[in-house]
Length: 136
Length: 132
Image 1 (cartoon, chains in turn brown, orange):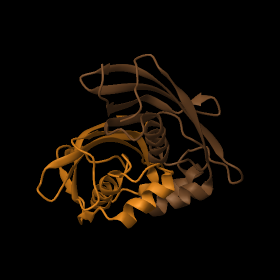
Image 2: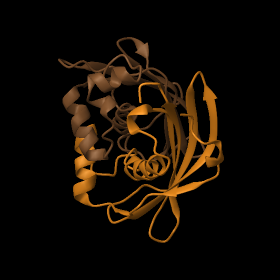
Image 3: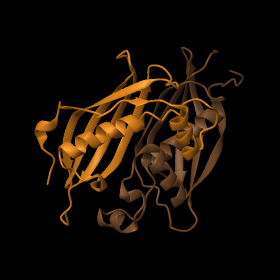
Image 4: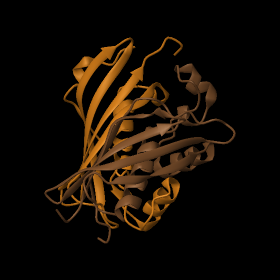
């Protein structure tokens, strides 16, 4: 791997715009056709503020940022709590920002500390990514 | 209607295995904008979702009443094109908070040899509601 990570490195934040069309494409590719990700009325009927992104779509964006930062390093652990919904408006989109730092490098693994926000609010709780990483 | 507490410990296999094809991976990678041509790390959700649907169908739980509360994956190895994957979901815990069922699940995703390649732990939040 060409990218060398060092504990304490601040990784360049990645911003992604999430649209309703993205959610339709993700539903088709993943098989998750839960209507709360498509239909305003259904989403509101179960107490949501509107159509929300699949939590797994947001987590996939984290995976994408990690792949960019690490030049596609092998992922060993990836996960988060979906603490606040990413509400996706019918027009335009919601901006999700994935920020990270290298928390530690040990035993051939790099652990990344992440902060994932939408419109300035944290949307993931305890997000975590661990990748294989040679070096000290 | 709250979820039946006797579910804890029960297994729900996905109804079919999934062959990891370039087409399937390509469609998923495109949908999430994954760079590179490896299998995106969240791809195993496809199988875990099938197993979850087997669970929801069995218990007659409406998908639209489920919100994903947490998801964590641990990978024994990267998935590769050509893998034939199967998944089994186990209900590992159940509690009620404020009218919602918090369902903890573990899904083991195995390759054709039976080796577990990825373990997914998910929390599903079920709001039973009153308008059903």
